[in-house]
Each structure stands twice: as C-alpha cells, then as structure tokens.
Length: 143
Image 1 (cartoon, rainbow, N blue to C red):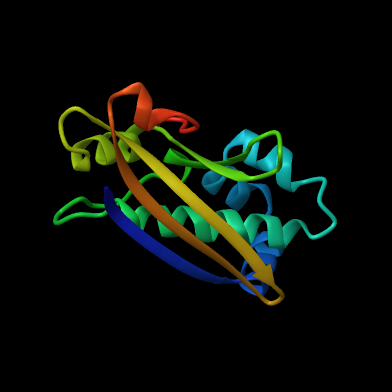
Image 2: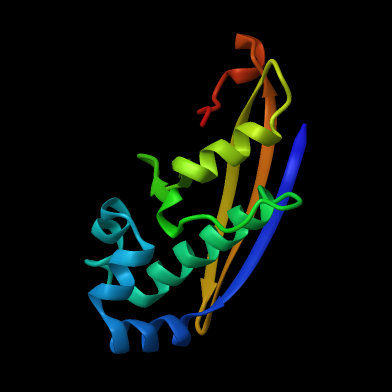
C-alpha cells in the first residue's frame, strides 16, 4: 500500500556554487559520512551530491503529514546496494515519521529513483507499507 510519494528537482549548478562557497561546512551539515565517501571520488561530484540532495527532499515530501515539521538533513541517507541501485536508510526523526505513517502490522519501505541530466538532478520517492508476513517481504529491505 502506498502511503506517500515525493519528487524533487535540483539545479546541479546551485549545489556546485554552494560547495564552492561553503565547502565542508555545507557537505558535513547535509550529507552523512557514507554519502560523502560515495560522492567525493566521483568526477561529477556536484551531480552526485545534487542527486542525494534531491532524494532527501523527495523523501521528506513523501513522509510529510500535517504538522510534521522539518527533518534533519542527515536523517535521510542515500546509499547504494551492491548492484549500484540507490536505497534509502532513515534515521532519527525521519524513521519515526515513517513509522508513524505506517499502519499497525505493517512495515515501511522507501523506494527511490535518481537521475540527472546536467544541469538538473531529479529524485522520485515512494513510501510503501508492507504487511508483516514473509510472503510480502521477500526481496524488500524494511526500514
């Protein structure tokens, strides 16, 4: 059952300028160490960061509800599975928010899709509630 969707479009040039201006102060405030380890060696470093920035925004929109307030930037973490597919790991207030939106006897899962075509990066997030039985959880990593 879908419990939320979100999308975001990010101008990669804006991320480039922000990194140039604030450097590590911006990167450390917004991105986890795992995200930084993934993005830093990339030749298109700003694109990698911009996709993750868009993903954080898209996930925040997907798990928003009335009076939910802001999430910490690092509460939504974008990682990659062994095949390279992006996956979302929620921490702190983001995890609590998803759990609050998920019906009893179900678990929440966030699907994410990322793309970029300079100068834009885009993310789509779908939050799904999955029944807590093994038949429905096959192949799903539950947050």
